[in-house]
Image (cartoon, one colour):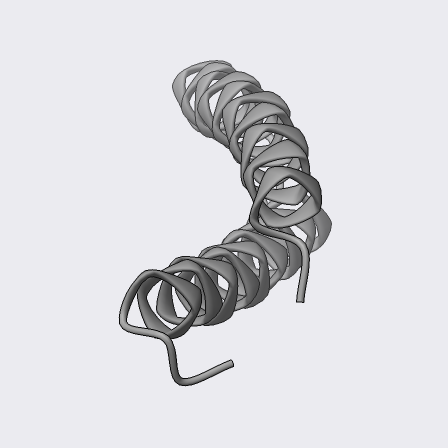
Length: 77
């Protein structure tokens, strides 16, 4: 395995996570605004859950990359 390629993948994953965190924060604001204005938040909350699920998947993927780098560093991959 190529450690440099894995580090590039890690940097890319970090970027995706940052974007997902921003989207989640924005959606939280949408939910809050809808609620404050007395609107139904059902769909906005569903979308918020989708963002949370996506973020969890991205973080899991990042963990796999970190594990691979650790294996490379330990001479196991």
